Image 1 (cartoon, rainbow over the protein chains, first blue to last red):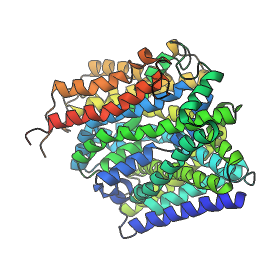
Image 2 (cartoon, rainbow over the protein chains, first blue to last red):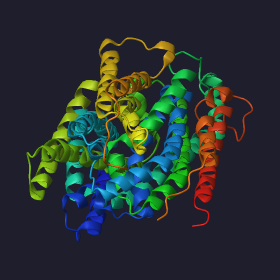
Image 3 (tube, each protein chain N blue to C red):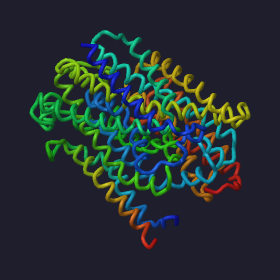
Image 4 (cartoon, one colour):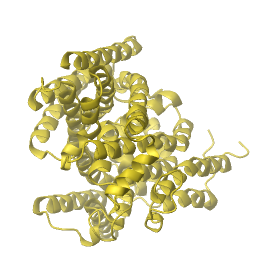
Length: 479
Length: 67
């Protein structure tokens, strides 16, 4: 059985790698090409890249996992993406223009340029790198679950994660950003089919219709489809603060900035922002998959919930179905992981090494990027071994961190509101310190607020106070 | 390309779905009425996701008149 399922996964991955490789082989790989795809992506490729990075194994397994283990709090995922696209409509075209006119490659480049501060660029690079680790861990962990289930016991957890690790590194080296965008085509089609199967076929098979699943869940768990309480854990205050935090952080990830830079024009970005919300509706099907699994295969606790509907498939469907859907899921992990690893690696090679003169040539920068790829993959592996938290949990850690960049970005858009760079840096440091404090002590947060949201408030207070004390520095750069 | 003309109307249009999907959610936190079999909370969220592109397209049209 494991041979069939794993064989199908291997075939799907091989096909995708060949597809991506054929699409990019004629293009010479300099850093601009490797990191931001030569800044030439039209709306289709950009849409695929953005969707490719956004709809990850988190969507595929994690959202179902939370629907399974928590119910209505999982609906936050539907809301935040939509709001992020609204914000992006106003914010990203300006960032894109600054990046284009000044030849910026990475997210931290934007900070370095707009605030004319090399250390702020380095700080943002370091923080961005650190908080990409849990995001890559999320993909690694998703791959591990899929390979283990498709292995029907033939692969243990450590072996599965080892293979996952090798796949991620292989994928990055073969693809670059452009190959990743093309691979996204194969991924999106397969993931859509997989999600339709899990969210429509599964409910119909077991209960007659998707709506019947809701009735059955409510019969067993009457509280499952609404938020319980106001200031309780996962209550309405948590819900709203988490939606706001994650919506603000959405485009602060280094790989999202790189995706923005890769656009051909500001118009491309605006059109994307208008229509991407429709893509969110795919999540609805993922929730149905999670709810169906809750009824058919109850009893999974905590992080184990991420395996919910895959276990149902393994139990009730033939190996080729498991292989096909797990293969789609593996792409949903590999494509975004590739973009994330590339972005993280470019932070190291560009903002921590090249900006300080440690590497001086294009070839040196490309080599440093490749070494950094291995480094982040190793760190993600280590974090996987230590953290053992749910996919949604991993994502929220990553968001808490990168959202701390938001005040510095949004206030930089107009010269009239641009704060003092020291204030921006101090705000980020205080925000991260707040996160570290709550994570280390496990102290409870007032009113059920999201931790990252509290950190963001303190960040803004520090930013404003420092700017008032030091005064706004006149910066020659204009956006 | 001409920089789009930003008016307070476009900001308000964009704020409507954004507020609906944040501070609006606690007010929609009900099970009934169930529409299409979904709990009302989910109906409400899905409705606003469908409306958002309409709002943003209107913003886009407003900003790109007379170009």
